[in-house]
Length: 120
Image (cartoon, rainbow, N blue to C red; front, side, top):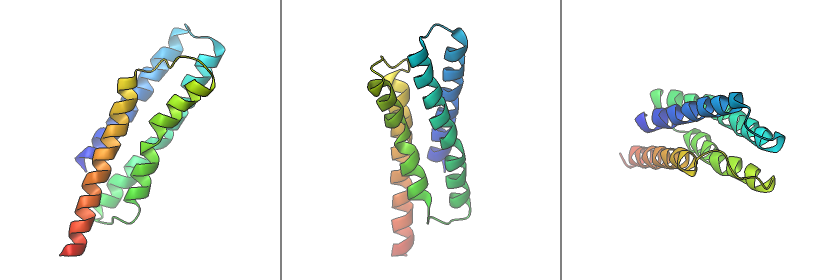
């Protein structure tokens, strides 16, 4: 559960970073649109991760893989938006990589717990 909460905190912090960046007004329209797109994507991740925590709390692992793996793809989708618009990403690759990695760790842990549950 801790790994999912860490992933949620990372997404939340990145949303705050994007909002700060957007307030700075130092971006052209295309870059601004990409940042807004990423902000919206990451905003959609928060309820998914909250639902994953709820599933873990209830000891129900049915939808956790889907919730986390869907969230895990969002940093790549964000980066693809910048690439398709042919503008340099204003977000650090480290931020996106950290979000991906935290989701990957959460997915590994929940998969391990789930498989152990079936073994006992």
